[in-house]
Amino acid sequence: MSIMDLKRALEPNRISQGYVYINEIPEIRSGKKGDFMVGRFRCREQEAEFRIWDEPIFKAVRDGGTGVYEAEVVGSSFNGNDYLTVRSIAASVNPEIKKSDFLAAIPRILLEARFREVQAKLSEIGVTDTCWRLINTIIEDPELNGRFMIEGAAVRYHDNIIGGLANHTIKMLNILAAVLENNRELLPNADLFTLAVTVHDIGKVYEYDFLEVSEFWYASHRVRGIEYLTRFADAIIAAYDEAFYRQVQAVIAGHHGNYGDRPTTVAAAIVHYIDTLESQTTRLVQEVKKSDDGRVRDKEWGFLMGLPLGNG
Ligand SMILES: [Fe+2]
Ligand SMILES: [Fe+2]
Image (cartoon, rainbow, N blue to C red):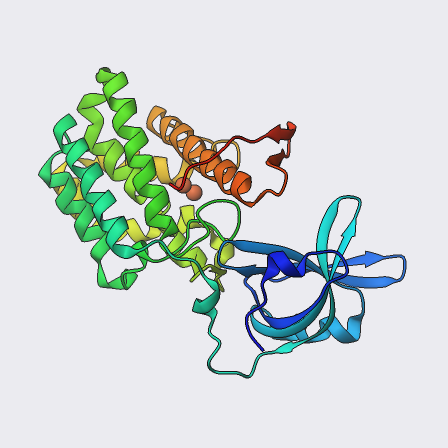
């Protein structure tokens, strides 16, 4: 048995067997004929919804949680929604099939090169060495175990890939460089914006655990990010002042706009817009790539026609 090709498995009525990976606890819903389970299998860039109609079959997943399973599925479709009906599923006992076999990763060397590039760009605009030194101390602290460069930015939706958190952050720093160049009145705050953007999602190393939701996810990455940053409070205040440190806290707390604590500072509002532009663009590109007919579905706007994409 090998790892299941999810795209092929979705072909109508096709029966497939293979290893599958579940990285999010599936939902149990109530239907006319009793409870059923709805979840998603993931394998690198591929994702497929699955449904399990019988409790004796979904019990294995309800008890086992996230992880690698062996499954037999049938390609199914209802009202234009393609999914896999699971006929049988059991936790994998094959030690040769690992979770990491299912996770896509951005090569570390590429991330480091992109980070250096954006650092050079921002330094030219005026970000100081003091700021880069502090950033380095914060992201390289042994407490994080190097996970700033490893963790995903999300379990679903955007940059849900090994290295996704750093990738999302680096892309935001690139947008920040353009924002600072376009609004030169903001330049005296270049260090503040750069440090705040770099750490805005750093608490995700606690919210997620290698692209699975962690035990203490409910405290949110905003709270955990603020908590983590207290280790560096003295160093940040010594390098700048207390107002700078409080402004960074406000960015972490308020960067989700209406979804979370509302922004209380202009810096938090601007970082929220940069965050939204970056994550939504990445989400749309990912969805166009995955789409069969080129269209993507937006929660508020309905179907959006796609466009031809390059290799990236
Ligand atoms: Fe966030
Ligand atoms: Fe973010």
